Length: 427
Image (cartoon, rainbow, N blue to C red):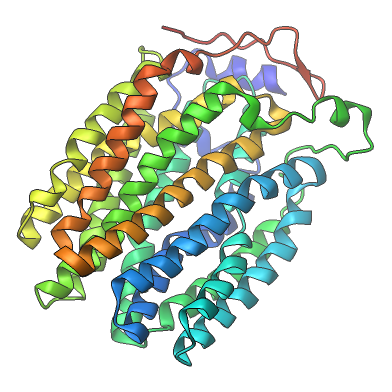
C-alpha cells in the first residue's frame, strides 16, 4: 500500500486535493477537528474567567500556567501510551476526565474559591487534555509512510491547528464577554466531550500499536525524547508557545486598557489567520531547500516579527503586527512537525508529536504567567516582551545545535515490518 501511494504521487506536485482524497481521511479529520478546537479555547477561557472572578491578570495567568505545565508534563506520557495501547484506550478516559476537571475548575472559580483551590483543579484539567492533534498527525504518518504527500499533510495539520486558533479564541472571548464569564470553558468541555468520543470511535484509521508483552514492541520501547533532534525541536516549540501565551494575555490586557475588551478575540484571530494563510501557502509550495534550513530561516523571521509587538500602541498597528507574526510562525511550526517523520521511528511518533505540543503548552504556561505579572505591574505593552525573549532564546539554541536536526539513516531499522528507506534532503 505504501509503495502504491508513493508511485501514484511521485510524478505529481503534492496538493491538498490529492491529500484529502486519501481513503478514510475524512473519517478522522472531521471529529478530530471538533476535538482539537477546545485546545485553542482552554487558556483564554481560564484567563477570562479567573480574571473576572479575581480581578488580577497575574492570578488568571498563574492558573492558566498550572494547566499548561500539567499538560506539558502529561502529554508525552499520553502519546507513549497511545503508541503502546492504541489511541482509543487513551482517548476515552482522557475525554471523560477532562470534562469533569473543567467543570470542577469552573465551579470553584465562580464560587470565589482561594487561589490554591484553583491551582489544585487546574492540575487534572491540564493533565487530562486529550492530544488529538498529535493523534491525527500519527494517523496521517501511518497512512502516508514514504509518500511525498507527507509534508503536505504536515502543512494541512498546521493549517487546521491555526484555523482552530482563529475560531477558538474569538468564540471563547465572545461567549465570556457576551454570555457569561464561564461560557467559554463550558463550550470547551462540551466540544471536547462530543468530538473526542467521536474521534475515538474511528478505530479503523488509528495507527498500529504494540502491547508491552509483544517482543517487537519491547525492542522498540525507546523514548522519542532520546532523539537529539526531538529535544532541539522541543526547545524551538517552547519559543512558539511563548508567542501564543504572551499574545493571549497581553492582547486581553491591551483591549482592556483601551476600553474595548471584546476586541481581544478579533486581534488574536488576526494573528492566527496570518498563521493559517501562511500555512496554506507553505503546504502548496514544492520546496527545494531542506527542512532544517527552512526551520532556521522561518524561526529567524518569527523572532524578528515578535520583537516588534511591544512597540505597538494602537489596535490597528497591533493587528497588523499580529498578522505578520502569524505569517512568520507557520513555516517554523510546519517544518518542525515535518522533521519528526525523518527523525523518529513510527513506533514512537505519537509520543514525539506530543512532546512538541507539550513544549508549546509549557512555553505558553510560562508566558501567560510572566506576561500577566508584567501587564499587572507595567501595562499591556510590557507583556509583549515575553514573545521577544522566548523566541530569541529558542532561536539561539536552534542555530547553535541545528546539526542535531539532520535526519539519521534508518535503512536497517524496521518498525512494525516497514523499512524506512525514504530518500531525504539534507544540508
